Length: 293
Image (cartoon, rainbow, N blue to C red):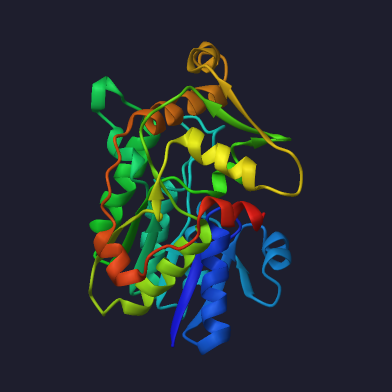
């Protein structure tokens, strides 16, 4: 049995991974799961019956305590839309604490959710400090001396139901003809579990995560609202210049403009052939995802 600690379990993309590990443990006792969370009560509610311990990426001692007896740790970290460049970031200062704690606790593998979109950095003069943080995080993990499992995902269907939804609208900024390979968090969770199951001692893993088909953001949003049955939804598109006007006055607007610029222009191609061969092909369509929400 492998023991897995999960940090960031309550986040949008941490939840399906955590549920997949918990299911693997229930079905075949493959994994012993421990959730390390700042807000233990919240994690207890979301994952009833799971082991939850308190830990904070700012506090190395709490991480050492949470990682004791664990074979591996999976990280679902992110830069919040309200964070400033000068703030504490879990993917930089926090990650340094985590790596040190992992060494102290004897952790044998680090799993980390990265991004395929951060490759847009440096293209057409585009620079964003958030992508610098994410690229530096990958470098930190690779230089940690601990075997790693790194995942570089395309767009998640889950964003349509959560971060891009405002009431009865799915919000999009600008229009783009690039076609991301949308993947459901549930499929991704199963792939992460399989990667950890396959990992050999000392082996490094890197996987591009892409869904079953490519589509523009507007195609994905329209298919989602068409299939959604609980209430009538609509797609609302705002021009990118409108968000750009708010950048000097709002950290959130600046974040939104930068991430949208990268999403709208990164020329994604299919790279998941090896991922599908090793970890299984994602099966969930946009319509199936919408019906389950």
